[in-house]
Length: 229
Image (cartoon, rainbow, N blue to C red; front, side, top):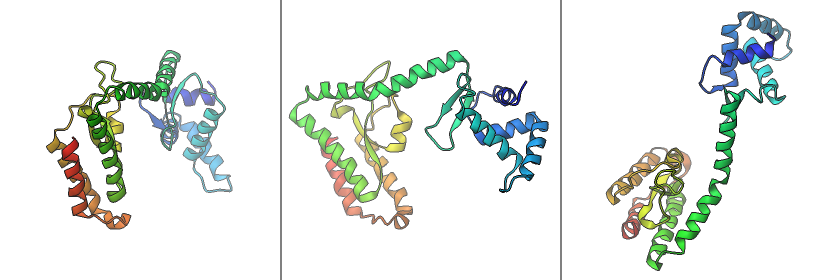
């Protein structure tokens, strides 16, 4: 078994996502001889490095060369990127899911376009007002609110509609976690409380963000929200 194969053998022992650094640590634990050799080579380097860092660099290089193209799932959406071992069938399935994710925005836009054509003027106004309020919360409180479909448009079991009665305001981080899941839509009181809590937490670091928290502005926006929610 060559070194590249030993590296792969190490990651096969876990189903978890690992950073390259975490993978390198596991290599050192499973193959102490490789770590000892890498430590010696690290000592001969001009730059300050360690055996584990040397192993991590070699794993990273092997991935870039395509050495594990049929053996790894790679999540490059964050830094540092993460990897995990996967069978050829699993990789094929994940590739199909990625294709579906890539075309999802087009499906979503088509649904919205279809539903908009069926709205009354009042319903269209309510949606426009919700979108405006999300932008104003960002402008005045530096909070990334998004207009979310409580019953997701792309949910596979019970998809929702682009209609004001299906919309709510969520922080971007929460909307991302929700993804295509269906949630019970906030009641108006829950929606108001959610926004107030988010603004209150933002107030703790507002001075560091150079954000002026004006209560009168918030209450004015919430009064507008009550009228269209």
